[in-house]
Length: 210
Image 1 (cartoon, rainbow, N blue to C red):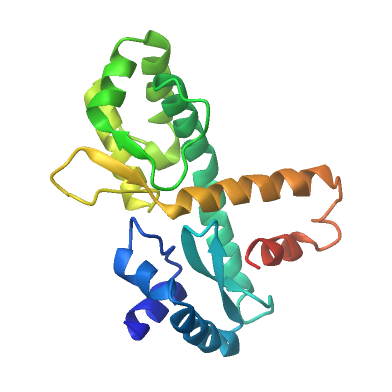
Image 2: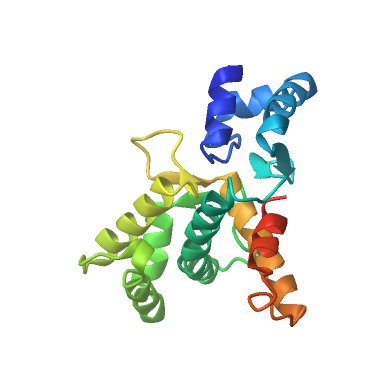
């Protein structure tokens, strides 16, 4: 299990009880987490935990050896931010929820479909979602569009289906990571610093991955 967990972390996977239950249970044991962290240290990474729902490997140093990889990872997550946030907003409205989706929340396809079919504004919002790069599709039917969006969220690690034959999706810990990213970017904007001119872009990325 050590080798499997270490490889998953180094590959950039987010380990949570929904997507990787065995690996999560392994890391939830303090002795195992310490072993993994000790393994990551010489590689300029460390084991991070968010809300007790997610483990991932964070960079501890930004230099020429990893700067390109960090930028690529950061750009990938940022490109997913708007589509996923807009999807969460649609779900909150459709299901009359007061709080945004968090790890372990259930998303039932048929329940969500029924709500969207009965509200034209939600149908329009779903259609706009499918024009965004992450969810881009030529499908026009509401059922097809919604199924496609949920499938893409599963492929990108934000949702998981414990039972592949079921239409019930579970939010993964990566959703909580997204919430942390949003909070980080909001804080960074509030600083009102010209980070690009000062060469602070790498510092921003480093702080995110710490």
